[in-house]
Length: 224
Ligand SMILES: [Zn+2]
Image (cartoon, rainbow, N blue to C red; front, side, top):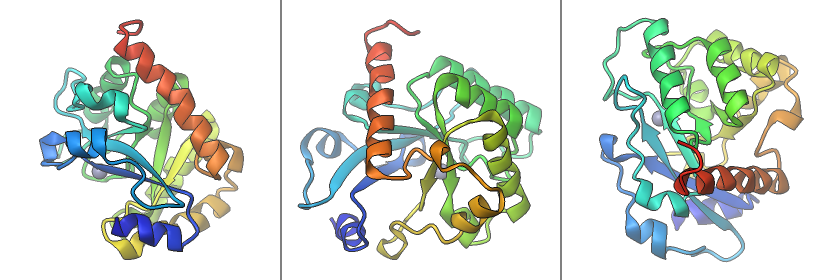
């Protein structure tokens, strides 16, 4: 409720809440997915989860029983995965996960130096599957990743014509809607607005609708 109120006060039309998946102790459950419906007037609550890669066979920890309620499924590599492997290993683990879980919508913070991946390979695959790549604000604003790394990621998205989702990564109310770290990078890279899925409300809802069909197809077994 606080996050929604803060977002509304900043003129935001919709807020997607994506707590971590179960492998990282996320707390989203049936109450959140099945019962909470737009609790704050004037702002849309969208629901999702940031799932975790959980192995080398493309497995992720998305609870499929909630998939039909999810507007946005994120996937990221997190500390439940051993660090210190090379970019080749992490890239192939992630590519396999995309192949097996086509309902994933957004790949989160690929610019994480603990888990390096090949940006050209991943952005090309993401574009092929219609997924978007997250450009994460707090990683930049809190100096958690070299800015050159984020620039390379943005450039790879531009070259692969891979769509991006701008994300505040807000963990406290003060951060809701923040994009002060992202904007200068997008400007420097002359990034096309048409590739930003959440550039405005209509574009964001169109992306969610488009991806909802992929989830429905997956659930009905048409995509394996
Ligand atoms: Zn994450």
